[in-house]
Image (cartoon, rainbow, N blue to C red; front, side):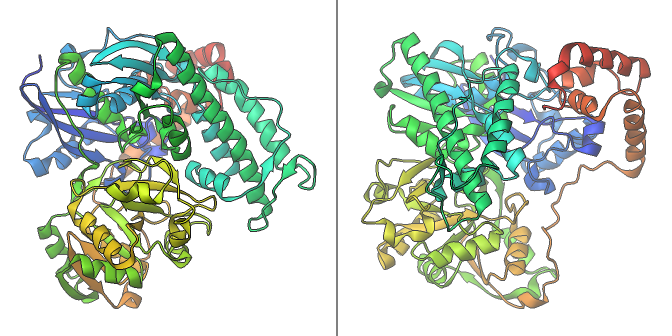
Length: 639
């Protein structure tokens, strides 16, 4: 049994070389602070490191253990505790503390710790459902990291479980299409979210693909299927668009966009087939009535809203998935896994998405009165829902409210809000965000009214489902609809966010539309805004007049005199100093006398190699060379 007190689960990486060259061992690094009292577990705070450093997806490792602990203490300081006050620290080699009695030795060794962390983030974030119902849970990430287990060397990359009334009936290997999406992104140069949007926005389809993808359970499977994908992409990018294989060419889009859209539709069909096959195998093995089960999803692929919605139709109409469903949720899953190992009867509820940094009224006051911003502040007053709606009807507003949401999507705490009734809103928001013209923006919808506006809809608090707007309604909300009338919906209740809920109610009273446009408060390539200074910087450089922070209406002027055009400098830096840079550069130079660039990259992405063999020792590097030539073979250049 764990003692009462504070606990930390972490998803960081510590490596001097990775700090300098920013090779991706772990991305979207994060940390969770927990408090345990008797059998009650409470999440106190959740930190996503990118929001404090400004490095999107936070690939860069800490340079040293000392630097990591210094940053942890800086983050913990707002709770008047330090690293030394925490009972246990889990998750990161070099800073783990007192982990002996919560080891995971009894878990099925076929699967990686990374997979278990994803799995438990969706299984247990609402523990009451886990304790009372039957859940089919799938963790379908891109693949495990190499920090704490064998990473891509593992036999199985992905995991599923079936649980009923608080008991795990079994763990199963499953397939994931996530690596195919990752390769598609890398080859065509568009992010997964952009690919998904383009697939539904453009009507073009290709009917000549006969060499079907096989299911991917392991890295070896992926290497084979990646070759097929490369051939498919090469063919689609060169096929005659007037051939019989090409249908529904869309003149609203460029030739390249038509070709990419054709590719994405093929990958989407394969993805749905993969997940459906996983579910069918599990259903048959455990003799399940899916209509009596919940579906739980985690891993980066679970950000694919259309496929989530297609899958959940076979289950109880609610998807179990936390807002931090990708690697931003690893600390959540690790903490819940550890508490479960220690005491299966513990209680926990995530409740909502708002566990990040809080913008306090004191912070707001200090920033707007500072010499940096005071000359740009025309007026400050307490806003009302009517004020907010009047401003939204005029143009987009910056909206910051309380604690930041966790995960990759803005959920009404760090957002830009707009009027969904006009396509112009979408155009303006896409210009602000530097996105393609056809990218839609998501709606935040009054939860109890979502069924009136969207087909087969239900509660979806974390924007992880796509619904089709009803035919008689879609014409009233063009800004939030994809070209196929679908929308990536977030539902909101008063309990979730009462300040924003009151705005939605007032907007509905005035316009008869129970929703508003919502897009994340960040510039292209920038993490979501975290604090007051960053919000004001964003509004000033984007020429937005109105900023709401915790209900305060801040009217800005003199935008033309604001000289900063870049992302606002965040308050934590983990870059190596000049002396450290010289040491690491010398180490890299010596490594490259023996290893190729690809081999060095492979070692750095597999920390069980990097931790065991010293890259400062020539004999050790030569041993690594032999291991890579003998064991890795096909892996080089693939990771």
